[in-house]
Image (cartoon, rainbow, N blue to C red):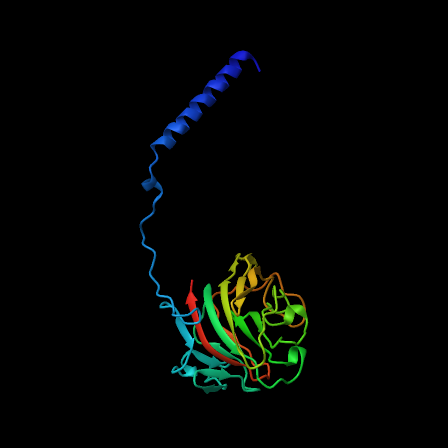
Length: 252
């Protein structure tokens, strides 16, 4: 590089820096303040378990179970319903929401039977299926070992929970779930996969976990599936009398 070229480049850089500094000097705080549209106001519940003002109450005391839920055939749910608590009746099958959802914040309270019967997967087993396809396991894992990717707080057969925070049998537990639905390419493959964050009893057990595909009992979750849109929530009948109450959801 000759001297003339070097001086030309140096001059250009000096001018560029001076111009940038001059433009920066003209900036004022208001230039980076966004006022509209105003952030919507939501009134929180009195406790983290209480539904905020924009939530849909899917299960609660004083609301008939059949108002928001059906069985797997679209008929009245066959679970026991008493004082706002729904309990699995063996052989009655799943119950599912009449509404369908994509991205959401979901609060669920569940309770395994007080009387301990069985071990491993045979003890207090149920599940919450997100968009009808992706299972968050419900299981009594208080002093009850099972395979790590099938215990309470797991995304069944895909991701083990970070920790086991199960309380004793017959005690109410909470799941607070943030779910981001998948998006699809035209050929039915995932453009973005489903992602799930879960707090169990207030403790983080899944953190923005990416699912490989729909839940499979046998085999590996598929990478390629037929693309889908919104889906219902499903509560599983796994022949154990697991109970649910105070379920609410916020669409995101």
